Length: 126
Image (cartoon, rainbow, N blue to C red; front, side):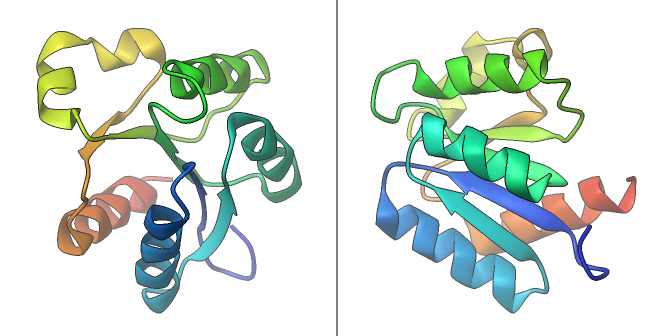
């Protein structure tokens, strides 16, 4: 938290997705950090120490999102991580998220109401 507000880090190589997430989250009282690559995401993560992360599964490389998550785990991350994917529903049926250290998957395009309800419930517990 920063100044009483939860900090959310969004990592996606699509600037339109990042902007949409930023607008929705900031309008609802969250502090938002953004990054367009896994490398930039690690730098912003270290600076901001987010309360929750939303990470694109396929960024500059097909498995960049999962590698990013593994690097966060190696750094001792305790914040919930949600993967954002255009194959979210299919991915959800095929993968055990807990094995990857994930809290869940969001399907692109994400519905603001779905996102906000989940964040409210998840961050309330912290």
